[in-house]
Amino acid sequence: MATLEGLAASAGLGPLGSLGPMLVGVVLLLVIVKLLSMPFKLVWNGICGAILLWLVNLLGSFVGFGLKITIFKALIAGFFGIPGAVAVILFELFAK
Image 1: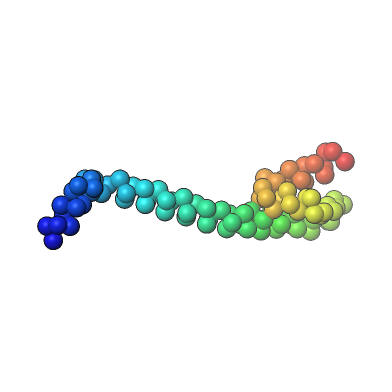
Image 2: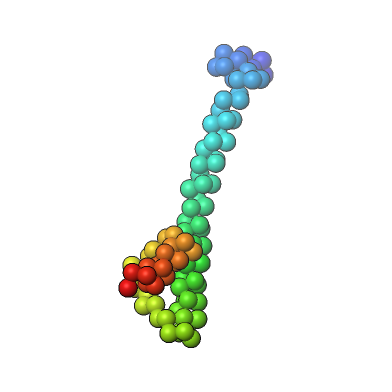
C-alpha cells in the first residue's frame, strides 16, 4: 500500500494533485452533455415552428390570409423555432 501511495505522490497525485484530472473530467462531461442536448433543442424548435405556421395557416384562413408552406419556409421555422416562424409570417405579410 505504501508503494502505491509513493507512486501516486511521485506522479503529482497527492491529496490536492488529483484536483486537476477531476476538473478535466468535469469539463469533458459538461461538453458531452451540451453536445447531446443540442439535437433535442433543434427538434423542439422544429416542433414549435411547425405548430406556429400551422396555426397561422388555420386562423389566417378565416381572415383571407393563406401561407403557402414550402421546404425553405419550413426549414427556417424549424431551425429558428418561433422567431423563425414569425419572420416567415412577417415576410409573407409585408414583402409580397
